[in-house]
Image (tube, rainbow, N blue to C red; front, top):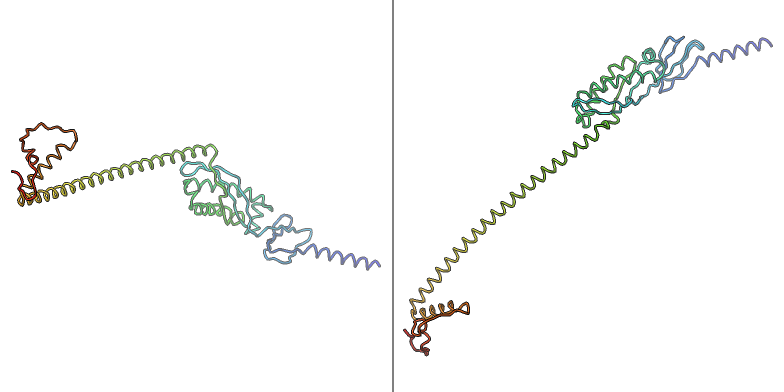
Length: 294
């Protein structure tokens, strides 16, 4: 009976020791085995692994991509403008042994070490860049430089920094109103310039239209004078032809024209002698076939 108890106890002890010695390494994990606080070996491959129970300790590190946000900080840019930026850093643990030796067994330690490095790299890089570059497509280049600086120092902790990003960039509160006022002044200046250019262009258009109007009127008057002269010339030629054909009739027609012009206003008065040539065609009424009085 005693032998069965001892055998059972021994079997239970063996099972307990075996279970305590074996552990599973997941796909997303990498393991550091320590013995009394001293690192012994690193296990990166997933599967079953073993350790000495009660003597060795298993410390697990995540092998996935990790990130942490940094605190907001105010930086002075290359054009002496101030900017408040929020960043986040993405990294992965590449050397669990060095990570354990320099940082410890928790992620809180790496955050304490990495935050001042990120802030220092951010200040040094942005200190050489103007605000326009930070807010434009050049931001990718700037963040690449920051990542290289951070990664160069972070390798000593057994990690690889894969990315550093500006999550948010704001102007300080005391500068916001000044910039808004400057932007408003700039917009007003542009508006004044546009109005001045518009008025100048309108003046040029009016001057050009007035010049064209003057030219058109002058050309029209010149053309009318030419036509009037041609008409008078034609009239003179017609009168001359009529005078040559029938001088007496032409004289009669000229007398009638003079009468019409004299009494055109309706209240004209003429003091003439009865035997004036002005009445020669009224002294006798010519009969058909009679010659006109001379």
